[in-house]
Every structure is written in C-alpha cells, then in structure tokens.
Length: 206
Image (cartoon, rainbow, N blue to C red):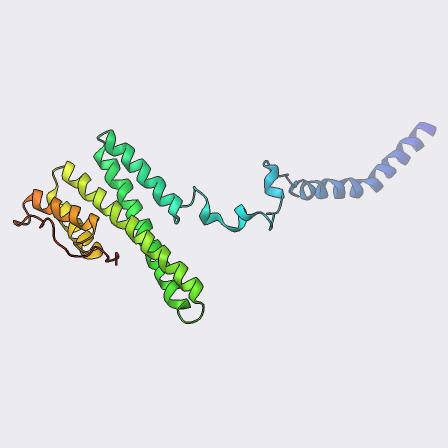
C-alpha cells in the first residue's frame, strides 16, 4: 500500500511539472537564434580616424589616388617601362589613363580659378598655375601616346593626337614643334618646320 501511494504521488508530481518542461523546450530554439556579436578581425576597423592626421584629411595627395598628380605620374612611369619593354598595348593603356587624369585635373583647376576670380586672386592664381602645369603634363602624355601608336604602325591614330598637341601648345613651343615634326615624318604634311624663325615661344597650353 505504501509503494502504491508513493507511485501515485510521483505520477501526480510529474504531471504537474510537465507544462514547465514543455515551456522550456519551446523557449530554447528562440534563444539559440539570437546572433552572437563578433569582434572585427582587423583592430584598426574599430578605431576612428584621427582628425589631426593630414594623410586622412588629404587622401588625393597620396600615391594611391588616381585623381592626383602623383597618380598620373605613376601611370606615366608604368607606360615608360612598358614602352621600353616594347609592350606597346600596355603602354597605350597607361598613357590613355594618364592623359585622362591630367586632362580632368586641368579642367577642374581651371574651373576653380574661374570661380575664385575676383573673389580671392591668390587662390585663383594658384589654381590657374596648376591648370597650366597639368595641361602641360596632359600634352606630354598625348605626345608619348602618339609615339606609341606610331611604334605600332598606326599613323591614323597618331595624327589626330599630334594635331591636338599643336593646337594646345601652339607651333612655337618645343612640344608643338616636335608634334609637327612627327606629322612631317609620317607624311601628313609636306613642308618641314621652318628653322631660325623669330616667332616668340611664349604661348601657353590651352
């Protein structure tokens, strides 16, 4: 009789605890779905940029930036190396990229110069000088690009570039004379460049 009463007692207690166990089973999957926060693999990602670091404030002055003088000059160096290795397709690609960079920079500096003209002449003059310098670099890249096309026996691609240089530099400047000489050697023009002319070479690239 005692054993029968004990069994009945345990059965009744188990039935009473059954809803609590069921509730725990239902809640467990929901808790398992909570995402576990992860730490960044790179510790520098958790560190804010230092506002006093000029490298963070002036990213276009770094060598890795495409829209910068350093980026354009790096492309010119890569093009020169490719040209020396007679890898003319790669040289053409790098020169085209450098020409585009210098042309964009020249246009942007010229727009800034025009915007500050009459407001702050110091800024306007500085941007105008930068526009002229980058225009000169653009014409140098254009001339090298024309030589690369000529090396690949593609005069039809070289001639328009040489004419662009003459229009930008004027025939009286050194690069303009070189471009005209290339046109003469290609047979596009018949008259050689006149030697000993007293025309002043003071024109600036456009």
